[in-house]
Image 1 (cartoon, rainbow, N blue to C red):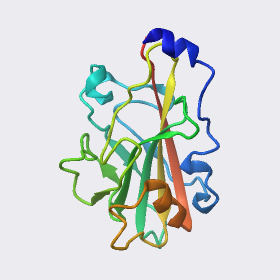
Image 2: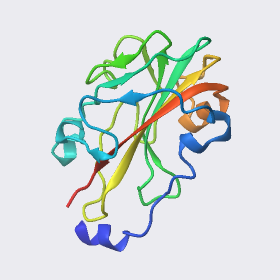
Image 3: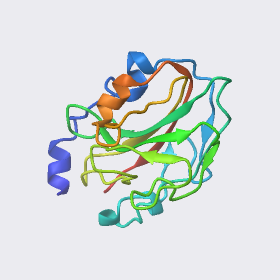
Image 4: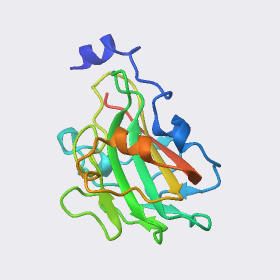
Length: 186
């Protein structure tokens, strides 16, 4: 598998298709989001890596300052812009209650999400799916993006809607934050 990673080394989706760069999700970068599990642009611990790759698929703990007045809901996205596809892989998409300012480890589990968490369908399925890049492809960034929405996303088909469709319906964004974790399979 390392040979495939080396062959695809220069093929990456890139940042342009991240939710972060969607025009309807543009907003002031006035939220601060951190994790007690890893710092921005540092290696994610193995516990957060996919089970097939030696991890436990446990979503990291996240902490953010409260959104501005008028925040109706948060949209949380976890994307890999370094995947060798035309678009970043969505590792998790969730709507969060506006009263939340933190998620404990494991709160994005597909089988039992935490209080105030509504999971959306992602590229891989529902819930958090940890890093699992192709061996030898190089470091991948896992971009945790948090958007404070002024209008909640809702509707009967939201649970079955494709995540990119839900993203297109989101906004306006009152504030946002980004936290990048790194993982590489050698």
